[in-house]
Image (cartoon, rainbow, N blue to C red):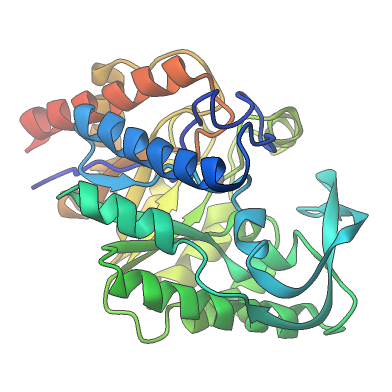
Length: 340
Ligand code: ZN
């Protein structure tokens, strides 16, 4: 089937589970109730995607507070009690981050509960996302390894362990989120892709990397406004990604200043094209979604195009995100009719 649809990863959480409209929400349940609530919300996220006609569904990241720290919580060697302020994404914003103080080790499984629960309740292809090694290393302070690359490789080994287990749980697509690739472009071919290869080592399921310009929060919007009329970051990293062993690349497109011609640099890869803007509450029409797919089809082979969101929808209002999901599913179906 041409133009299958999927989401970048996160969806808004129900307000009974966590504070709405926040990137770092506080949970509203505790203990066993929280664990059960996360699974209930996962089921809801799957159902909403199915109803919207999304083909490759995701757990909506309902079980994690944040896309990076949801993983870090399960890693030994990290001090969460004494966070330090650090400029992240090349100082685009400051965040209070935990500190690596010893050898990194997984405490156990990270996403087993939600992955198995989702798998048991949908027949559709299922995707789970993990933070990428470079992005993790840019979101945590190091007081142990003394070398960013060495620490990133240690994280890559842990990601690989969880990814292999997720594959065994029946997950079809494992995606690594690497917004840092768009910031440290020179380091991507230097070691970023090596770290990803370490994270996907031995996997036979589909592998993906998501590289965006960030959620629709003010620091990101200000940054985007400083990037000029044509955003060329992808031009520097796509040739190296095209040569990598990653199967799919998820990119930001609609309402961005990414020149579409750059997508042709991803020769041989499935391209998850962002056809839904997560930085605006304006709901796309199916016609707009189909038109964007049509534009991309001029530079990417049709059979390589997957319709997706620009980024995660975690901080959005829930009803807006649901309407956007519907537009995504309907727009991909319309594109199939028009360009199939
Ligand atoms: Zn993103």
